[in-house]
Length: 274
Image 1 (spheres, rainbow, N blue to C red):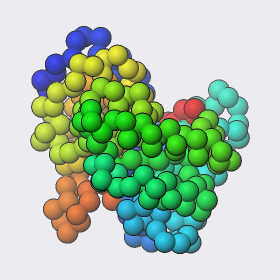
Image 2: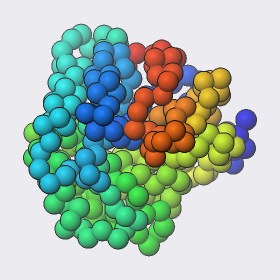
Image 3: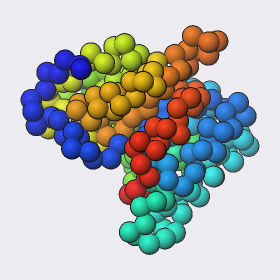
Image 4: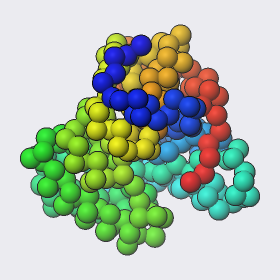
């Protein structure tokens, strides 16, 4: 079991509250058609998936990405508005998030906003994933300025119901103030060998599980239950676990489905719409 530093009340999801998936970014729909098609499958407990064409929206609309985005958008509409409110066997209505690379605070504000507008105009995204987000206190004011502007852009968009969703891709625990700058923080991204002994920051106990996400690669099938138990124990509501490790000619282990995708979906259970 991992060594934990948080107090007992940080163990917020130990009682079985439902986890859901966040997809850091599949490969292009031409290279990963099954992955993108599977996101819209009824019953998939999807919270959100990231669309990343070329570390951003690309230079022009991509027809294959437009098709994948439209399919996920339609699945969300069906999940939220297409049945009985008590029907929990529908897709969870996951959002499509546009990938914005903050380059640890080095990218100009104007460039990021230009990319954000392209994502909204072309793909009708429902939020943004801010990759390589700063973690130190000094970077917080700039991130707050950016997220405030992005929320305003999303509020003006007819595709982002509820004002959209912003996820900060820190990959580790940042300065606590970042928790007030966005809807969700990625506080772990890395290999299973690190995750199984990871520590959770004590300040996370002040927030509910839906505020945190964990992405872990190299998780063996035989350790799936342990990995899910760690996520619940550490208070993460969104996960993506994969047995891929990037060693077989693929640099990004999150670019394709884990070999046990159907199994982990069945372990988490059917999606519940927002």
